[in-house]
Image (cartoon, rainbow, N blue to C red; front, side, top):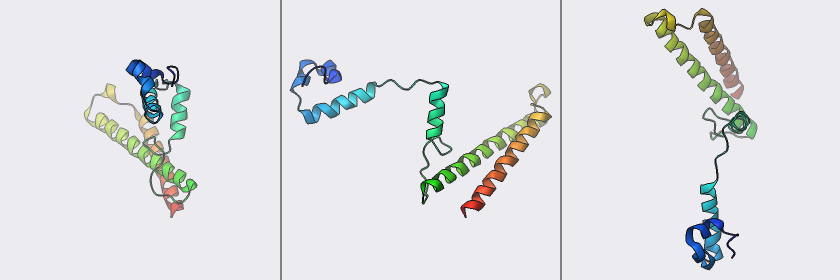
Length: 135
């Protein structure tokens, strides 16, 4: 076993790393290497690839029940649409509270309010179609 083969172990244990059995040295070196890997940069292409790789509303691959990969994709789309709808409705509700009880300068205006309603309607229609299609 050479120092170049196990740089993390050698840096940690010095020459003692040369005396470790192969079955122990390899997993330890791999663990050190994984712990020291730099995280992927945060930029638009990397974020888009991560989003495209995740299917569910939490950004992770769909874990729910599904009989085929296509059904998993459809379920994940329903999940994302439903979570998006809830988020839009929460935003609309908060805006309505500001409109009624807040100051006029904090109101987003009729145009933005109508946009929120239309977005909610569109997502609700999509979810309804997807749910009907899944039955």
